[in-house]
Figure 1 (tube, rainbow, N blue to C red):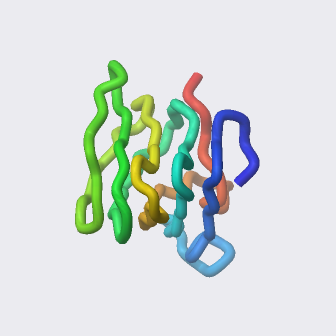
Figure 2: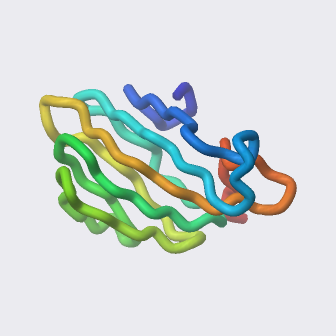
Figure 3: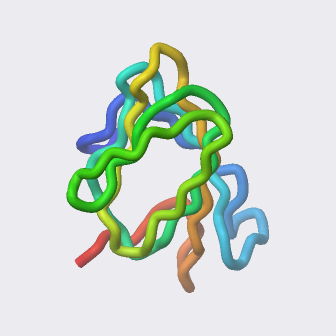
Length: 112
């Protein structure tokens, strides 16, 4: 994924409205060593389930929450957050986001 502030991250859209999913999109996200998202927010909530590796999710007030395989996190709508790989191996997670009317689930709506 080539977005400003993102590094060494791949996102695969497993299920979106293009596949007939009316309400939620399912993504597989992989972060290489030192890979990360930007510190960002959007109007959609996130449900994250970590499959492999270890990292941190940076939340509001820059608080870091350690994560590893088997952990699940919920990110509220409009909550700033960032995912970082802190290990030497791939950090892999499944992520769900709601699909807003008129959208596909392949993107998010930035906070205002």
